[in-house]
Length: 299
Image (cartoon, rainbow, N blue to C red):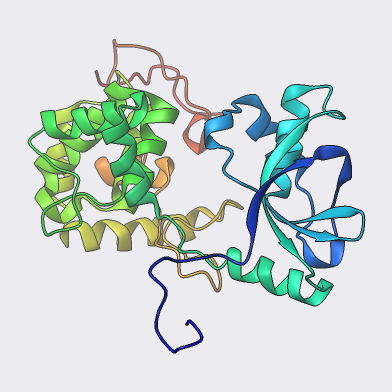
C-alpha cells in the first residue's frame, strides 16, 4: 500500500537482484536443511545454468547467508570446478536477523509438491523418451492415461514396469489385464504384480492361458488381491506381504510374482508344466530337491 492508501501499480519485492561472490557465501546451519551430497552430485551431473533458478541470500555483515538454493549453489561449484573467483546472481535481502532468515526459508519452501501424474503428463509433452514410450504403449492397446473413469492413473507403476522389464513386458502386462479384467483391473497393485509375473516367465507363459485363468477366477480383481494375500501368508516368506500395507503409510497392496503365478494356475506346483519342452530353471520353492527332473515349462 502507498502512503495515501492506494495499491501500487506494480509489485515490488523486499529483495533485489545482485551478483554475489561465491567466496563470500555462507550457510547458517540453524536456518538450513542438512546438505545432501548425493543430491548435489545428481544436480551437478546434469547441470544446466538455465535451470538453476535464482538463489536467495541474506546480507549480514561481510557475508551472504544462503536462505534458499544451498544444493544448487553447491552443484554449481562442483560443476564449474574452480569457483573461488566466480559470482552468482541472487535475490539479496538486507538486514534480516537469523530468525527472519529461518522464517524466510520456511516460507520459500512451503510449495505445492508436483505429484507423479502431473510430472508424467508434462514429461510426455516435453518429449522425454521413457514417458513418451509408455504413453505410446498404452494408447496402442486402446487404453489411455487419465484420472477419469476408465483411465490408468498409476503412472509411477507403469514407468517402473517399463524401466525394470522393458516395453514388451509392459505391453504384455497391460494386454493380459485388459483382456482378463477390463477397466477394473487397471490399478497399480495389479499392474505391478502381473508385470512381475510377465518378467519372471517371459516367453514361457501362455498369454491366453493367463487371461483365461485370471478372468475365470472367483471374485474378479478383488478376489485376486484377496487370494494373493492368503497365498502370501501361507508361504511364510520374510518378504513384505503381498497385499499387506506398510504400517502407518496407507500404501496400496502389491502382488509379487510367486503369488501372482499361483493365481494363474492354481495347482499344487503353481504354474502348470508338461514334458518335452524347456527345462525348469526357477529358483523358488518348487525347485527344491526331490522335484521331478521331467517337469518342463508349458510354452
